[in-house]
Length: 321
Image (tube, rainbow, N blue to C red; front, side, top):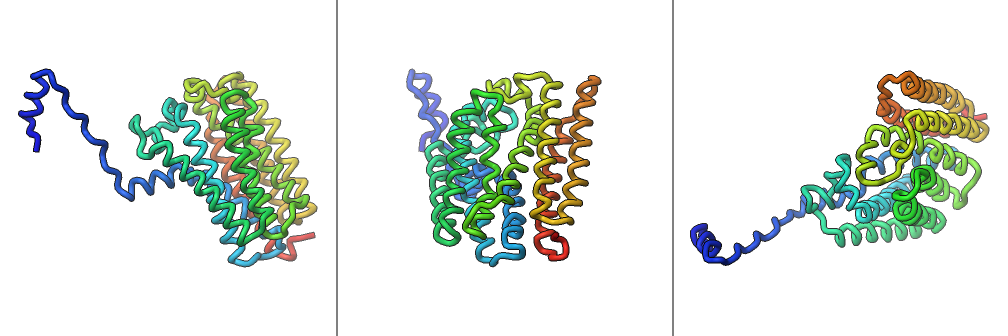
């Protein structure tokens, strides 16, 4: 065993002290890091939209087996996309305070090696494809794969670091779970599924821009041109308001397919969301503190309640037209 005295003696004699070996990683630490790479909180929100969509497609409750297969497959697909996103964006994640504790960059070295993250992401994607294809149908599997590829190549590699429209176009990746859920039940993609896709597509910019307003300095430090970085707060608030109106209009377009209970909820929830979007716009216009995170958190509650209304309508025959 090398003593402290002998190490000091080696150093004083002109030698070099051997580098300490990297700390050993326990299976628990590695497992927690791999799960964290998948961004579980984002996946939860995606799954909130999947089950109600499946209930609406079936006009009732599909088989428990199919629901579980679709949820697990969707979780694997979203985890794959998020993990590979972390692998690609590890340089900017290290710069941004909000993301500096992610497994690839935490403490400056990370608890997971880049190749491990990439392999994990690919493995999750392959698992999602096989599970959905073999136990649901290959259309659902193909749509899940399209979501992964869109998120990686269109959003992460093409748009995120180059265009303020990054989250507008790239956010489409988060809309695919409703298509996957519908396809898993029906084997097709019908008009109601496309309308639900549009709802989430139009919901994403207000939701994410509100977050980006809060962390504008983070994105600026990482040279990511999110809209709040390259545009004035007034411009951002105005665009949030426009997208909010378009989103509410899309929710109303589902009423003929979903039913009157859903319609009541869609109108009430839409009024609530628009009131908050107007509030944000007004506070920025008069120079008050905008508090964008209020709209961010409200947007999560809004989407959850809206899809809960879809589920209720699908389960109650007397709630339909």
